[in-house]
Image (cartoon, rainbow, N blue to C red; front, side, top):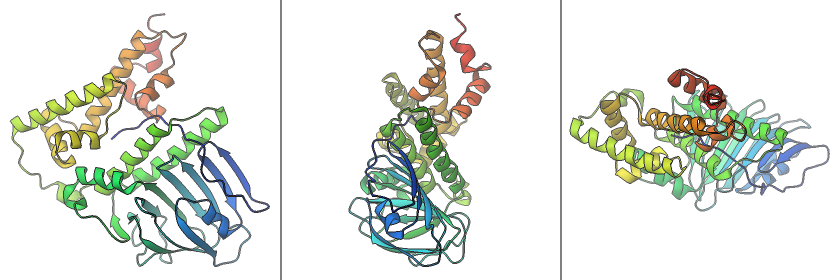
Amino acid sequence: MTETQEEPTVSKCDASLAAGEVATSFSGLRSTIIESAATQAAMQPWVAMECYQLSRGKQVSQMDSLDLGRVQVVREQQFAAIQKLGITPEDFCTISYCTQDPAFRFSDHSASGVNSVFFIPERTEFDIYVPPGMQTAYVSFSQSEFVGAARALNPRAWEQPKRQVSQFQSRQLVELKGALERWIGVAEAASRRGQGLDPASMRDIVLQTALRIATATPEDDARRRPPLARSRAMRVCRLAREFVEGHLANHEVPSIVDICVSLAVSERALHYAFQDYVGMSPQAYLRRCRLNLVRTTLLAGNPQDTTVTEVAMRFGFLHLSRFAGDYKQIFEEAPSATLTRRM
């Protein structure tokens, strides 16, 4: 999966705020203290929804939302109890999670475990009760894009389209939680610097992260490794490497979904092939390829008009501190040292 650069477009959320509410916005990012349940609904115009405040409190919630066009990232800290009633539009789906609370209800599901993840498909009615003190978050996508990619990664789990709210447990939920905090943090930092982010790249980051959560194979099932001939593994990995190199040469960062679709293999088969071939996952291999490309670019760059941040983000590294750590671990020098080596 990939991390990539980002740039939110101007938000479609133009809902006017009730008197006394505090909001900041920059491009697609909005951080808002909400004092009206109706405003909480209006701030999410991509879904036909009504919100009702059910417990006392002047402030209803704090919402952070990142509108990337076909993808929205929303995090809500609930101060007062609220009920959300609505229906998802056509070609729209969400992946969501919440802090654990036995009083929470997501249609006919509860937050039964710390790893609970909820999926709402298109044209589906929902009835959600969120008690005060809970944090909820969701990411929305084009259903055709999301389900098509999920089916390519894990055909067995996603072959039949889901037609109602569903719940599953994912040990990788912590990754989604951390990523969501990072996406909003990056947008906030860009806002403070007066910089823009690339919406297409950000959408890809969000999609790939959510797909990892939704298509992960259960731990005990993953141990039952199907046999894979060494010759087939080599052929699959060679084709994957050529596919990746071709995209990177054009300054494009292919995703695992792109590779699986191109080679007509599942993510599981691709993972086993790479383990046989180079002893690492395809995600790790793709990351090493991008690190090498960054190094080549830095070695050829002029420190006067080239920055490590610009090059790293060009090749899909959003988490810059992690990038710097990985770079130093592989090449035994900081990326800044590589760039200034010619001076």
